[in-house]
Image 1 (tube, rainbow, N blue to C red):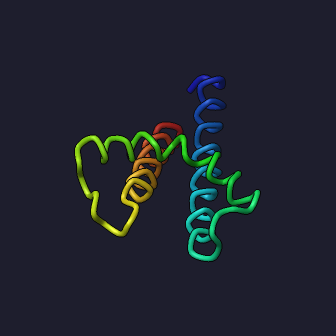
Image 2 (cartoon, rainbow, N blue to C red):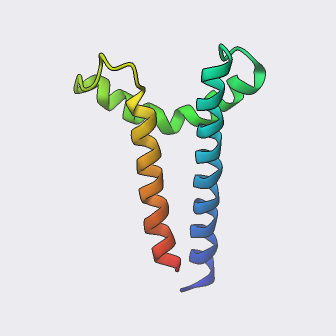
Length: 92
């Protein structure tokens, strides 16, 4: 595999790992705090661009609207894990 592609894929994998970690911390903070701290707002700004397309799709299709669980968050995690598995297999 050419080195520039390897570096790009490695960077994307690192970004996905950071995003997944930030989503995990955001979920934990949502159980503990009300989300008004600077750090919680930073995590929201960091993770929301990844979650918003799934959330908009669920609202547009009127799927899972009355659920107490944020399925857009969960589906985003699964999508990121799937992309991570595909990219890992690509460079592995």
